[in-house]
Image: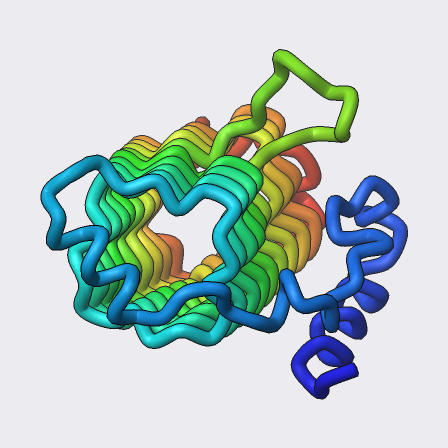
Length: 259
């Protein structure tokens, strides 16, 4: 098994019992579907250049350099893009539901309006990427979201079908310093132990979100909704525009770290 596979599995095991219904449980990360590519960059670029709708659903694109391409609106549902380079790639309106993007590099990518439902982005890099208005109920565990823009994005839980467990945005241990979550819908999102320092949560809905152990130092929470959000051991030092009444509606505020 390759080193990155071992590290990914180690991260899952370290997460503990919260991942009892983990969609990656039992997945062979060394399998060809997870490590190989069935197309070349030139073939992908050729399809895009054709001007016809592009359907790459289920394709193996692992490790490909797709940086800078315009994949706006492309159907990548259930595609495998593990460790692919998508730096500066335009993915506005793309369908990435259930895609595998473990360790993918999306720095500076445009994901505005994209659908990332159940997308596996563990360990991915989205530094200064934009995902404004995206459906972002994917798994960003351990991802680097530094300076990313999720304005108006929807990380909230899908309460319609729970047969596979709670489908919601997961940002456990993510690095999201300075990220923008302005007006984002994050009800029930999991942000435990995430670095959210200096992030912008203006107008965000954090109802019932789990923020245990998260670092919110210097975050802007003007107008943010904290109803039943769990703030156990969350670091709240120097919160900007905090409303005492709004924070009082959170759970375990008395157990947060405020100094």
